Length: 144
Image 1 (cartoon, rainbow, N blue to C red):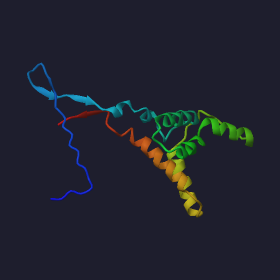
Image 2 (image 1 turned 120 degrees about the horizontal axis):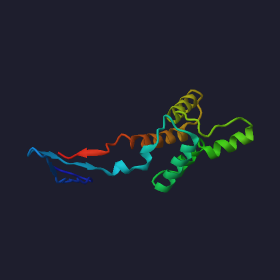
Image 3 (image 1 turned 45 degrees about the vertical axis):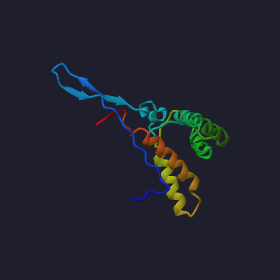
């Protein structure tokens, strides 16, 4: 067998057990780091511009995400939208929630139909999907 240009990692978990009063034992449930993920608290299908600004701030603090994508996200936030509404004279409610992911998907679809650039919106969608995926990581795991 030949392995080239790759590395294999084996992780050993030591299983611990909880002893019950009837004498039986059950595998202990351990918390994962994902349970502390501050990004998992955001519902991107029901989020307000205020919450978008908070999310963008946390993404900046994290330092792992492309600043261009964060700037695109901020265009949906309270600070940018309130400035835009003062320039255009249209009304704006910073607490009104909307489906951010659905809106970005719709923007991409319209841009594709019109043969307009959509790459920046697509990159933003990938960032949002990453944030959304952080919610699906189990908070507790059972080691076998």
